Image 1 (cartoon, helix red, strand yellow):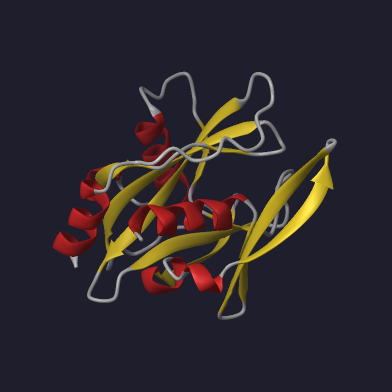
Image 2: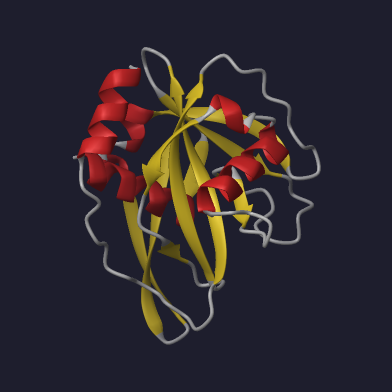
Length: 186
């Protein structure tokens, strides 16, 4: 698996995406799309604890704000994955990044794609994450699996993406980032 996904991802030029929502002075964030290296590749997802002040109980990619001490977005995504699920940065082979995704909550999220070991024993930060699961890469890459709902917010129309899978509802920024990955690799 390592060769095919890595080659496919790295050899495709990043196509600009429509900018979508852009608000003044966005806060920088980064997430890790950890592609688990196994015969049937999958992507690691978390469910945030319901006690969190923002986005509690939601399905998310490991990630968060870019700190002043982070040299770049990749370092921030790897640091956050280490803090949230115990994935050592040295175990992840960074492959690149996707276009930033702008949220209505004034974040500009940079998705970092990396190849991670499939057999790592996850160690959850119980203050941030209450579950870890995997979604098959084949599901993420199936553009027909996505649903979209257009909603009005802040005087504009916004597309909200949904990807239901095996009892989990992947939606919002995470689903939009997944759809961008699928478009990148099609």
